[in-house]
Length: 257
Image (cartoon, rainbow, N blue to C red; front, side):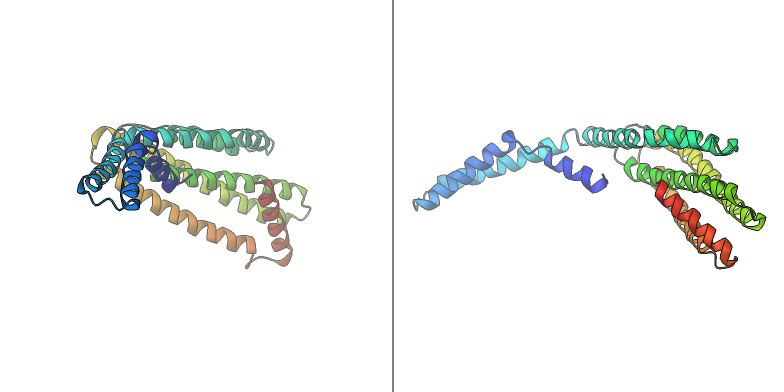
């Protein structure tokens, strides 16, 4: 679901028999008058009034409770996202415990805790503005999870290597991924603090807008890092054998998603 899906659901919400009955009555009356060549202005006026009444009922029902319905749909989306990935993340956590590096499972645990807190952050001031922030938080979280998966595959490949130069290169790449996850964790912690501050001190959404721009900038930086990761996986400045194993590790990571 994206923002357009939520707005579409909100626009369709008031459309039922209460809204449509006057419209159908007015349209039927107008068509009947046209069909029998009834020239009475009363029939035409009644038809127009009924159609306008239907439009007025629709707008009234649309505007009343808009924020509450928006927040409810956003919460349903959050719950669906969490439910769909919790089982996968539990499996990943169990696998990360096998790599002998306590940092990776600790990072995943902290990422899940912070992201869940961000996804459930709610207040009246956030209701209409939080979707973009929550969506960007989810992107940052998913990229971090992908890096942890890749770090696991690189560790497994390095463990199977006999040549030390290849093993060292794989583990060096793994360290880069872990460092990027640590940076993302710090970013998410900062975002949570800023969201709570905005909810308390700002009712006009100005601080949220600034936070949204800052988070978008961080995502752009993450995209640049991903480009460098792709270049490293392509191994333009390492040996052919190292490139082969880096490519192998990347393919394994893709299969593990």
